[in-house]
Image (cartoon, rainbow, N blue to C red):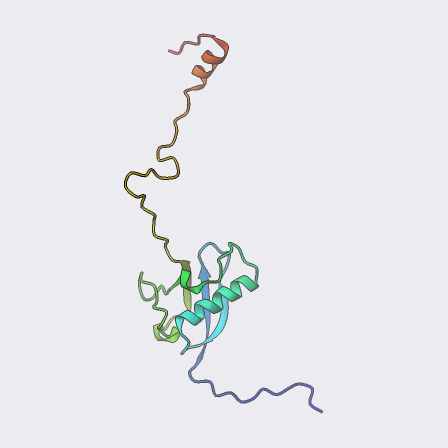
Length: 139
């Protein structure tokens, strides 16, 4: 009697790699096995699903188009989503959110928030003078 179901012999092209993906702001890396022929976009998707399944913080979301994968060996540019993950020869990566473009206010309109922070009303001496009508002189 067979106690376990035997897996079918699957023809997997390419080697399998154990990769580590550090998420900016998270406590530790996510590790999982991928096929070296897998696209970077598929790896980002798998990383986001694993991150959410583990309940990690900060909450990232699930849209892979909002994220970029960086490889420290290839320089400061993000990896193309259409590259294969094994083509870079690395196993450690960094997952970051894409920078959001800043909204430029239209002409004639003021920004929604205060542009200039308010200064304090004065020192504690002036507050006491105003509230108690006392005069405190400083040197």
